[in-house]
Image (tube, rainbow, N blue to C red; front, side, top):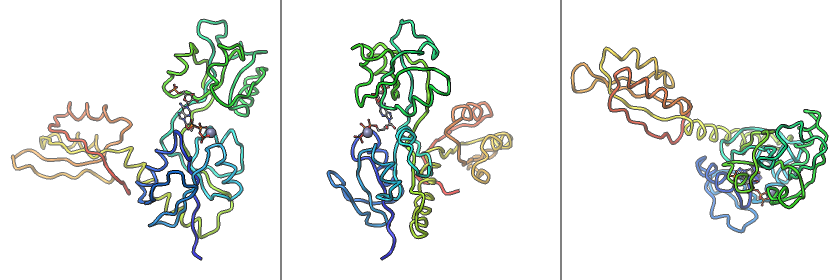
Length: 286
Ligand code: PRT
Ligand code: ZN
């Protein structure tokens, strides 16, 4: 029998949509997985297992699944023996210490001897050790943010994304202890056949990620400004330059990184570029 790579994905929750979207963008077609434990892709040698996110690191370590998509926070807290393969660019959040606003806890050292509620006892205790603070950790599995109000703890250590949960509970962030996003983890002893499938999948994932981080740009420029404009748009190899029907003008096509996008656009305009069009890229294979 030929190899199949077993991928563990969160069954429902914050990472489900992003995980399924990524697999779809990698050309992996699955029929609707609702309420199924497992689906087999029709056009790529993978099976997708739908699991609770907390179980994924252990299942991957024990080879129940070969690879998994899970928050880095969950992978690090679980401390299982798995390989961390790739950051996936969604599910971004941070694990932070937070305290009641306007209270007397204002820096990490003020937590000495205090009680902190969290679902991340391992990450919290290693952080506290690293800053030599002794505090007692109260592990709870949900609604950590209400712990200070009901007198269960002096502070919390929880995931934050927009910050609105902290705000509504009159808490403020004291310190971020981890930046997290969805990552791909793998079992440490994949067979050569499975490794080969993983390599093919990674090639696709990287093309999707790269496309998301870049945009296609088209613009018109006077010919005497082409040098400076091309310096701003190095592209993959170099920009494409085509003459416009109007003499003295060219159309420039290139790829631009999302990270300093607005900066580059401003400089392009300052260098005489006109009619700038920005187009999303679907896949990018450099
Ligand atoms: O059922 P299962 O065990 O699979 O799911 P779960 O309920 O344990 O996890 P889920 O679906 O809530 O989150 C899965 C993963 O999403 C987490 O492990 C993180 O990696 C990632 N993630 C990203 C988040 C958040 N953002 C997030 N904001 N996980 C949780 N939150 C919670 C946080 O705990 C807090 O209650 O959202 C609240 C704060 O959000 P803001 O926007 O108000 O700051
Ligand atoms: Zn969970």
